[in-house]
Image (tube, rainbow, N blue to C red; front, top):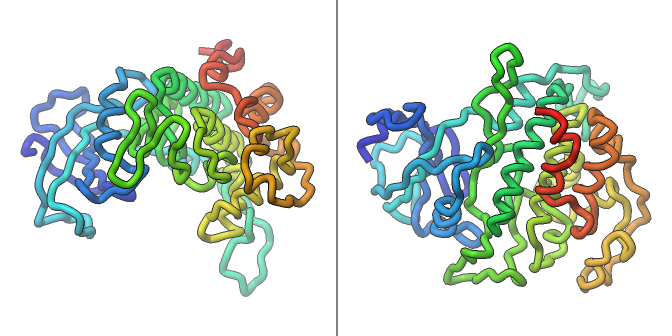
Length: 358
Protein backbone atom coordinates (compact mmCIF):
# COMPACT_ATOMS: atom_id res chain seq x y z
CA UNK A 1 0.00 0.00 0.00
CA UNK A 2 1.41 3.36 -1.05
CA UNK A 3 0.45 4.86 2.29
CA UNK A 4 3.40 3.22 4.08
CA UNK A 5 6.63 4.53 2.58
CA UNK A 6 10.39 4.34 3.15
CA UNK A 7 10.24 0.70 4.21
CA UNK A 8 13.33 -0.70 5.87
CA UNK A 9 13.79 -4.37 6.67
CA UNK A 10 14.54 -4.88 10.38
CA UNK A 11 13.78 -8.48 11.36
CA UNK A 12 12.18 -11.77 10.38
CA UNK A 13 10.25 -14.60 11.98
CA UNK A 14 9.78 -18.18 10.85
CA UNK A 15 7.10 -17.22 8.32
CA UNK A 16 7.21 -13.43 8.33
CA UNK A 17 9.36 -10.36 7.81
CA UNK A 18 9.17 -7.10 9.71
CA UNK A 19 9.83 -3.65 8.29
CA UNK A 20 9.94 -0.14 9.70
CA UNK A 21 7.99 2.34 7.59
CA UNK A 22 6.57 5.84 7.58
CA UNK A 23 2.83 6.51 7.58
CA UNK A 24 2.46 9.14 4.87
CA UNK A 25 -0.98 10.17 6.19
CA UNK A 26 0.29 10.83 9.70
CA UNK A 27 -2.83 9.27 11.18
CA UNK A 28 -1.14 7.60 14.14
CA UNK A 29 0.53 9.12 17.19
CA UNK A 30 3.89 8.23 15.67
CA UNK A 31 4.51 8.39 11.94
CA UNK A 32 6.91 5.45 12.20
CA UNK A 33 5.18 2.07 12.25
CA UNK A 34 6.14 -1.59 12.00
CA UNK A 35 4.85 -3.78 9.18
CA UNK A 36 4.67 -7.53 9.74
CA UNK A 37 4.45 -9.16 6.32
CA UNK A 38 3.25 -12.78 6.18
CA UNK A 39 3.24 -14.90 3.02
CA UNK A 40 -0.05 -16.63 2.28
CA UNK A 41 0.41 -20.39 2.03
CA UNK A 42 3.82 -20.45 3.72
CA UNK A 43 2.70 -21.50 7.19
CA UNK A 44 2.16 -24.81 8.89
CA UNK A 45 0.36 -25.56 12.18
CA UNK A 46 0.31 -24.11 14.75
CA UNK A 47 1.11 -21.02 12.67
CA UNK A 48 -2.07 -19.69 11.08
CA UNK A 49 -2.27 -16.15 9.73
CA UNK A 50 -6.08 -16.18 9.65
CA UNK A 51 -6.18 -17.30 13.28
CA UNK A 52 -3.63 -14.62 14.20
CA UNK A 53 -5.74 -11.92 12.57
CA UNK A 54 -8.97 -13.12 14.19
CA UNK A 55 -7.40 -13.23 17.66
CA UNK A 56 -5.71 -9.86 17.25
CA UNK A 57 -8.91 -8.20 16.06
CA UNK A 58 -10.80 -9.65 19.03
CA UNK A 59 -8.47 -7.98 21.53
CA UNK A 60 -9.54 -4.60 22.81
CA UNK A 61 -6.98 -1.93 23.58
CA UNK A 62 -4.64 -2.86 26.42
CA UNK A 63 -1.54 -0.90 27.50
CA UNK A 64 0.61 -4.04 27.62
CA UNK A 65 -0.55 -5.65 24.36
CA UNK A 66 0.55 -4.44 20.94
CA UNK A 67 -2.17 -2.61 19.01
CA UNK A 68 -3.26 -3.66 15.54
CA UNK A 69 -3.48 -0.38 13.62
CA UNK A 70 -4.28 -1.62 10.14
CA UNK A 71 -4.17 -4.65 7.83
CA UNK A 72 -3.99 -4.97 4.07
CA UNK A 73 -2.94 -7.37 1.33
CA UNK A 74 -0.29 -6.77 -1.29
CA UNK A 75 1.66 -8.51 -4.02
CA UNK A 76 5.33 -9.40 -4.25
CA UNK A 77 8.14 -6.85 -4.26
CA UNK A 78 10.57 -7.41 -7.07
CA UNK A 79 13.03 -5.03 -5.47
CA UNK A 80 13.10 -6.62 -2.02
CA UNK A 81 16.12 -5.41 -0.06
CA UNK A 82 16.06 -7.95 2.77
CA UNK A 83 17.99 -10.71 1.04
CA UNK A 84 15.24 -13.32 1.36
CA UNK A 85 13.07 -14.82 -1.34
CA UNK A 86 9.58 -16.17 -0.70
CA UNK A 87 8.94 -19.30 -2.74
CA UNK A 88 5.43 -20.03 -1.49
CA UNK A 89 3.28 -17.23 -2.88
CA UNK A 90 3.32 -13.75 -4.32
CA UNK A 91 0.51 -12.60 -2.01
CA UNK A 92 0.99 -11.22 1.48
CA UNK A 93 -1.07 -10.03 4.40
CA UNK A 94 0.48 -7.10 6.23
CA UNK A 95 -0.18 -6.21 9.87
CA UNK A 96 0.50 -2.60 10.84
CA UNK A 97 1.46 -1.90 14.45
CA UNK A 98 3.35 0.70 16.50
CA UNK A 99 7.12 0.47 16.15
CA UNK A 100 8.71 -0.43 19.48
CA UNK A 101 12.47 -0.64 18.91
CA UNK A 102 13.72 -2.75 21.83
CA UNK A 103 13.04 -6.26 23.12
CA UNK A 104 13.72 -7.52 26.63
CA UNK A 105 17.11 -9.01 25.78
CA UNK A 106 18.22 -5.64 24.40
CA UNK A 107 17.01 -3.86 27.53
CA UNK A 108 19.05 -6.22 29.71
CA UNK A 109 22.10 -5.91 27.45
CA UNK A 110 21.94 -2.11 27.53
CA UNK A 111 22.01 -2.03 31.32
CA UNK A 112 24.34 -4.97 31.95
CA UNK A 113 27.91 -4.46 33.03
CA UNK A 114 30.73 -6.73 31.94
CA UNK A 115 32.24 -8.93 34.60
CA UNK A 116 35.24 -11.23 34.49
CA UNK A 117 34.39 -14.65 33.11
CA UNK A 118 35.65 -17.82 34.72
CA UNK A 119 39.23 -18.67 33.66
CA UNK A 120 39.55 -20.52 30.37
CA UNK A 121 42.33 -22.53 28.81
CA UNK A 122 44.67 -20.44 26.73
CA UNK A 123 43.80 -22.53 23.69
CA UNK A 124 40.06 -22.17 24.16
CA UNK A 125 38.13 -19.74 22.00
CA UNK A 126 34.82 -20.25 23.80
CA UNK A 127 33.43 -19.05 27.10
CA UNK A 128 32.90 -21.97 29.52
CA UNK A 129 29.43 -23.45 29.62
CA UNK A 130 26.95 -21.70 31.89
CA UNK A 131 29.21 -18.70 32.25
CA UNK A 132 28.04 -15.24 31.25
CA UNK A 133 30.32 -12.26 30.85
CA UNK A 134 27.45 -9.92 31.75
CA UNK A 135 26.21 -8.83 35.12
CA UNK A 136 22.52 -8.07 35.32
CA UNK A 137 22.02 -4.44 36.37
CA UNK A 138 18.30 -4.13 35.70
CA UNK A 139 16.83 -2.15 38.62
CA UNK A 140 14.62 -4.33 40.81
CA UNK A 141 11.75 -1.89 40.45
CA UNK A 142 11.98 -2.22 36.66
CA UNK A 143 11.85 -6.00 37.04
CA UNK A 144 8.70 -5.55 39.11
CA UNK A 145 7.16 -3.19 36.52
CA UNK A 146 7.88 -5.62 33.67
CA UNK A 147 6.43 -8.59 35.55
CA UNK A 148 3.34 -6.62 36.55
CA UNK A 149 2.76 -5.41 32.99
CA UNK A 150 3.06 -8.89 31.52
CA UNK A 151 0.80 -10.28 34.25
CA UNK A 152 -1.79 -7.68 33.30
CA UNK A 153 -1.53 -8.58 29.61
CA UNK A 154 -1.86 -12.31 30.31
CA UNK A 155 -4.70 -11.83 32.79
CA UNK A 156 -6.62 -10.02 30.07
CA UNK A 157 -5.82 -12.58 27.36
CA UNK A 158 -6.66 -15.54 29.58
CA UNK A 159 -9.97 -13.93 30.60
CA UNK A 160 -10.80 -13.87 26.87
CA UNK A 161 -9.96 -17.55 26.46
CA UNK A 162 -6.67 -16.83 24.65
CA UNK A 163 -3.42 -18.70 25.33
CA UNK A 164 -0.44 -16.82 23.91
CA UNK A 165 1.84 -19.91 23.65
CA UNK A 166 5.06 -18.04 22.89
CA UNK A 167 6.05 -15.90 25.87
CA UNK A 168 9.75 -15.05 25.50
CA UNK A 169 12.02 -11.97 25.65
CA UNK A 170 11.87 -11.38 21.88
CA UNK A 171 8.10 -11.01 22.16
CA UNK A 172 8.29 -8.37 24.89
CA UNK A 173 8.96 -4.93 23.42
CA UNK A 174 9.69 -1.49 24.85
CA UNK A 175 9.75 2.10 23.66
CA UNK A 176 12.74 2.89 25.86
CA UNK A 177 15.76 1.02 27.21
CA UNK A 178 15.27 2.13 30.81
CA UNK A 179 12.98 3.97 33.18
CA UNK A 180 13.62 7.61 33.99
CA UNK A 181 12.37 8.70 37.40
CA UNK A 182 12.96 12.36 36.54
CA UNK A 183 10.64 12.34 33.52
CA UNK A 184 8.26 9.67 34.80
CA UNK A 185 8.98 7.38 31.84
CA UNK A 186 8.53 3.76 32.92
CA UNK A 187 9.89 0.60 31.34
CA UNK A 188 6.46 -0.44 30.08
CA UNK A 189 6.42 -3.94 28.50
CA UNK A 190 4.28 -4.64 25.45
CA UNK A 191 3.46 -8.22 24.47
CA UNK A 192 3.50 -9.01 20.75
CA UNK A 193 2.99 -11.88 18.28
CA UNK A 194 -0.18 -13.97 18.19
CA UNK A 195 1.10 -16.15 15.37
CA UNK A 196 0.69 -19.42 17.31
CA UNK A 197 -1.87 -18.31 19.90
CA UNK A 198 -4.93 -20.39 20.69
CA UNK A 199 -8.44 -19.15 21.42
CA UNK A 200 -11.22 -21.17 22.99
CA UNK A 201 -13.71 -18.99 21.12
CA UNK A 202 -11.77 -19.10 17.85
CA UNK A 203 -10.26 -22.61 17.62
CA UNK A 204 -7.60 -22.74 14.93
CA UNK A 205 -8.23 -24.90 11.92
CA UNK A 206 -6.21 -25.97 8.92
CA UNK A 207 -6.30 -28.75 6.38
CA UNK A 208 -3.56 -30.53 8.33
CA UNK A 209 -4.73 -30.34 11.92
CA UNK A 210 -7.73 -29.16 13.93
CA UNK A 211 -7.22 -28.07 17.52
CA UNK A 212 -9.83 -28.60 20.21
CA UNK A 213 -9.69 -27.72 23.93
CA UNK A 214 -8.77 -31.32 24.78
CA UNK A 215 -6.42 -31.88 21.84
CA UNK A 216 -4.14 -28.93 21.21
CA UNK A 217 -0.84 -28.87 19.35
CA UNK A 218 2.04 -29.38 21.78
CA UNK A 219 4.82 -28.27 19.44
CA UNK A 220 4.45 -24.63 20.48
CA UNK A 221 6.67 -22.10 22.19
CA UNK A 222 10.41 -21.57 22.22
CA UNK A 223 12.29 -24.53 23.65
CA UNK A 224 13.81 -23.00 26.77
CA UNK A 225 10.40 -21.52 27.68
CA UNK A 226 8.35 -24.70 27.15
CA UNK A 227 6.52 -26.20 30.12
CA UNK A 228 6.69 -29.83 31.32
CA UNK A 229 3.21 -30.65 30.01
CA UNK A 230 4.28 -29.60 26.51
CA UNK A 231 7.47 -31.66 26.73
CA UNK A 232 5.43 -34.75 27.63
CA UNK A 233 2.87 -34.14 24.89
CA UNK A 234 -0.12 -33.44 27.16
CA UNK A 235 -2.68 -31.98 24.75
CA UNK A 236 -5.34 -30.69 27.12
CA UNK A 237 -3.12 -27.96 28.53
CA UNK A 238 -4.38 -24.50 29.35
CA UNK A 239 -3.19 -21.01 30.19
CA UNK A 240 -0.81 -22.54 32.75
CA UNK A 241 1.80 -22.95 30.00
CA UNK A 242 1.95 -19.16 29.66
CA UNK A 243 2.50 -18.83 33.41
CA UNK A 244 5.38 -21.31 33.27
CA UNK A 245 6.95 -19.27 30.46
CA UNK A 246 6.44 -16.11 32.50
CA UNK A 247 8.22 -17.84 35.38
CA UNK A 248 11.22 -18.52 33.15
CA UNK A 249 11.17 -14.89 32.09
CA UNK A 250 11.01 -13.78 35.74
CA UNK A 251 14.12 -15.88 36.40
CA UNK A 252 15.83 -13.90 33.63
CA UNK A 253 14.79 -10.54 35.11
CA UNK A 254 16.21 -11.48 38.51
CA UNK A 255 19.25 -13.40 37.25
CA UNK A 256 22.76 -12.34 38.15
CA UNK A 257 24.17 -13.07 34.69
CA UNK A 258 21.36 -12.19 32.23
CA UNK A 259 20.50 -15.85 31.66
CA UNK A 260 17.33 -17.84 32.23
CA UNK A 261 17.27 -20.46 34.96
CA UNK A 262 17.22 -23.25 32.36
CA UNK A 263 19.87 -21.65 30.12
CA UNK A 264 22.22 -24.62 30.46
CA UNK A 265 19.82 -26.62 28.29
CA UNK A 266 21.13 -24.81 25.23
CA UNK A 267 24.74 -25.63 26.06
CA UNK A 268 24.05 -29.30 26.67
CA UNK A 269 22.35 -29.70 23.32
CA UNK A 270 23.02 -27.21 20.55
CA UNK A 271 19.60 -28.02 19.08
CA UNK A 272 17.77 -27.11 22.30
CA UNK A 273 16.01 -30.47 22.29
CA UNK A 274 13.07 -31.28 24.54
CA UNK A 275 15.16 -33.96 26.23
CA UNK A 276 17.94 -31.49 27.00
CA UNK A 277 15.45 -29.04 28.48
CA UNK A 278 13.74 -31.78 30.49
CA UNK A 279 17.09 -32.79 31.98
CA UNK A 280 17.74 -29.21 33.02
CA UNK A 281 14.25 -28.79 34.52
CA UNK A 282 14.80 -31.94 36.61
CA UNK A 283 18.14 -30.60 37.82
CA UNK A 284 16.56 -27.28 38.82
CA UNK A 285 13.16 -28.39 40.19
CA UNK A 286 14.06 -31.86 41.36
CA UNK A 287 12.79 -35.25 40.23
CA UNK A 288 9.13 -35.33 39.13
CA UNK A 289 6.97 -37.73 41.13
CA UNK A 290 3.26 -38.38 41.44
CA UNK A 291 3.39 -36.33 44.63
CA UNK A 292 4.70 -33.12 43.03
CA UNK A 293 3.22 -33.76 39.58
CA UNK A 294 -0.01 -35.77 39.88
CA UNK A 295 -0.90 -34.99 36.25
CA UNK A 296 2.08 -37.12 35.22
CA UNK A 297 0.18 -40.23 36.24
CA UNK A 298 -1.99 -39.86 33.15
CA UNK A 299 1.02 -39.80 30.81
CA UNK A 300 2.29 -43.19 29.68
CA UNK A 301 5.75 -41.89 28.76
CA UNK A 302 6.12 -40.44 32.27
CA UNK A 303 5.03 -43.66 33.97
CA UNK A 304 7.52 -45.65 31.91
CA UNK A 305 10.49 -43.35 32.49
CA UNK A 306 13.12 -43.75 35.19
CA UNK A 307 14.54 -40.48 36.47
CA UNK A 308 17.74 -39.70 38.30
CA UNK A 309 17.21 -38.60 41.88
CA UNK A 310 17.66 -34.82 42.05
CA UNK A 311 16.76 -32.59 44.96
CA UNK A 312 16.60 -29.43 42.87
CA UNK A 313 17.81 -25.90 43.48
CA UNK A 314 17.01 -23.56 46.30
CA UNK A 315 14.55 -20.93 45.02
CA UNK A 316 17.12 -18.25 45.78
CA UNK A 317 19.41 -19.82 43.19
CA UNK A 318 16.63 -19.70 40.59
CA UNK A 319 16.36 -15.91 40.86
CA UNK A 320 19.45 -14.66 42.72
CA UNK A 321 18.60 -10.94 42.68
CA UNK A 322 14.93 -11.28 43.57
CA UNK A 323 13.45 -9.84 46.77
CA UNK A 324 12.59 -12.36 49.46
CA UNK A 325 8.86 -12.18 48.74
CA UNK A 326 9.43 -13.03 45.07
CA UNK A 327 11.69 -15.95 46.00
CA UNK A 328 9.25 -17.37 48.52
CA UNK A 329 5.83 -16.64 47.02
CA UNK A 330 6.18 -16.13 43.27
CA UNK A 331 9.02 -18.10 41.67
CA UNK A 332 8.04 -21.48 43.21
CA UNK A 333 4.40 -20.87 42.24
CA UNK A 334 5.28 -20.26 38.60
CA UNK A 335 8.05 -22.80 38.06
CA UNK A 336 6.51 -25.95 39.51
CA UNK A 337 5.74 -29.31 37.96
CA UNK A 338 2.02 -29.29 38.65
CA UNK A 339 0.01 -26.84 36.57
CA UNK A 340 -2.71 -26.86 39.23
CA UNK A 341 -0.29 -25.26 41.70
CA UNK A 342 0.81 -22.44 39.41
CA UNK A 343 -0.39 -18.91 39.98
CA UNK A 344 -2.86 -17.61 37.45
CA UNK A 345 -2.08 -14.29 35.79
CA UNK A 346 -4.87 -12.63 37.78
CA UNK A 347 -3.50 -14.04 41.06
CA UNK A 348 -0.02 -12.78 40.22
CA UNK A 349 -1.29 -9.35 39.20
CA UNK A 350 -3.19 -9.05 42.49
CA UNK A 351 -0.26 -10.18 44.62
CA UNK A 352 0.59 -7.57 47.28
CA UNK A 353 4.09 -7.13 45.85
CA UNK A 354 2.59 -5.71 42.65
CA UNK A 355 -0.35 -3.90 44.23
CA UNK A 356 1.47 -2.02 46.98
CA UNK A 357 3.46 0.12 44.53
CA UNK A 358 2.42 2.21 41.55
